[in-house]
Length: 211
Image (cartoon, rainbow, N blue to C red; front, top):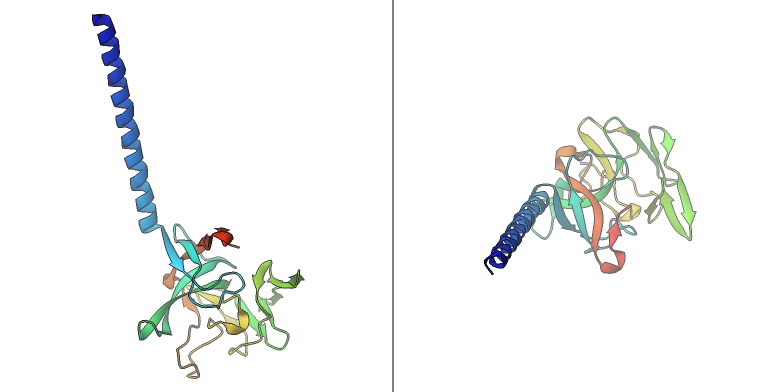
């Protein structure tokens, strides 16, 4: 009887240790998840139609800046200090756009044909099922609405961004020329990039990775 009691006690001790180890691992995993979401991952909501057809107003996205380096065609959350935020009644607004040029790139836009050139190479536009794609990424229309009339070079530490809804997007095409009552965006300092949007969580019918 005493031997059975000892076996039972040993099993109970193993069970307690297993439960303790599981609990410790669970807490460690939770701490890692909380740390990642606090410092490397955040959520963001789309405001407005400037990224149609890729993103819609009020889409909920997951954004990361973990070891992030700006690259062509990334969808990014940026802070535009010279754009008026009507909701807050002050200058400075967070917006979402797609990176078209990184530092050193030259960008030229032919507003007549709606064609964008990067380093004198045309960003090829194709059509599939009545949808337009530029370098394989969906856009709402060709790029006809343009403020800049000459080729521009992206300076060090900046990016050139545009919305996928090309003719209804305030972006790097619009500079400080005094003609825009809500302000302007121009080139974006990389320090004003909050991160790359890579996953859509809402609405559920569009749940998945972004392209």
